[in-house]
Amino acid sequence: MGIFDFLKRGKSFEKRNKSGMIELFLGDDISVSGYTPLSKNPEVQICVNYIAELVSSMTIYLMENGKKGDRRIKDGLAYKIDVEPSQIYTRKNFIYQIVKKMLIDGNCIVYPEYQGDRLYDLKILPNATVISGEYTYKVFNDGVVYEPDEILNFISNPDLNNPGLSKGYAPELKDLVQNLTQAAKTKREFMSSKYRPPLIVRVDSMHEELSSEEGRRKIIEKYMKTSDAGEPWILPVEMFDVKEIRPLSLKDIAINESAELDKKTVARIIGTPNYVVGIGEFNRLEYRNFVSTKLMSIAQIISQEFTRKLLYSNERYFKFNQMSLYAYDVEEMANVIKSLYPMGLINKNESRDWVNLSPTDDGDEFKLLENYIPADMSGKQKKLKGMEGKKDE
Image (cartoon, rainbow, N blue to C red):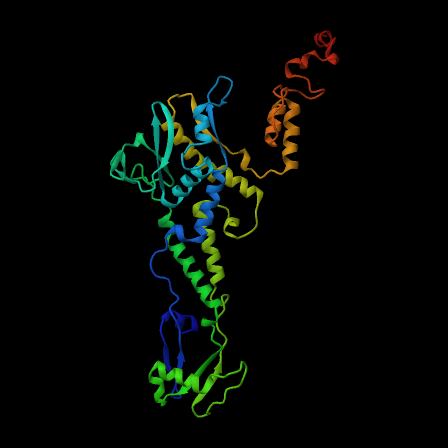
């Protein structure tokens, strides 16, 4: 049995050896008991906060279907959702709260309050309880019962057998969170001197004072305590045998390797790249894939619930603008604009908007390469005059 096993016993350990000496090792319990909530685990919180921070940074667009493609609508409802959805929170904090509650609790219930036909407020109900039935569900909050069409129910990781409910990530993360909590406590205790004793003192087993803790302390005070640091001990040779030991390190018990593996698994379950939990370096391609998959999946859950519960028109819908999340630098963005603008695919104002510049009065025209003339005048260039007859020939 090693030193680490002694530490986990949580009480004094005594062992009689072959020579009739008693070895003393005093240890405290460093094991973790009980359940650690997901909201208390640092790794889970890092992943959840990272996702909530990015999703809440995206602009919410109100879109309308059109024959030539969908276009953005800017009206009172669009302003309400994108600027001031809540009387308490800003838009960013409001979406942040929704995402965080979705990922930690599984469900986030929001009650839309109306004044006449006008949407007045969106209230997050933190204490709401979802009770699932066979084909539907109900929401209970402070003694009030809500039907599914009266509330917004944002769900992550939905339960296949219970409509309206989420099974959350707790079942998958329970053991991992417990392991990480244990690893953190073990590391903290090992880094302190309390669990790194430099000596084991073997004392004659016939010494009566060993029968109590007070007696053992008296021996330490009498023979081993000195007034000056580094002063040698003077001990009776027939009573004491002092052995220097080398305590286990974190590397010896593989704490770091085990914790790193658990962190990677936590990140994989929640859906974030490994660099979020401090493993590896930032990778731009990995980040873009993360935006296109995990972040946009959560954004679609929110936007589709907004669309389904807040809009009457079948031609309109909400969506999050993900362009602001991609890790473009100025040079890369300039190259994208250079390739699109000369082809007439974007206009000047759209180009300026991508780099956070204000629009200009003449910036809505689409222009083509050459002299950047309007697209509808591209066939009237001087160099094309007289070419009609040659084409016929």
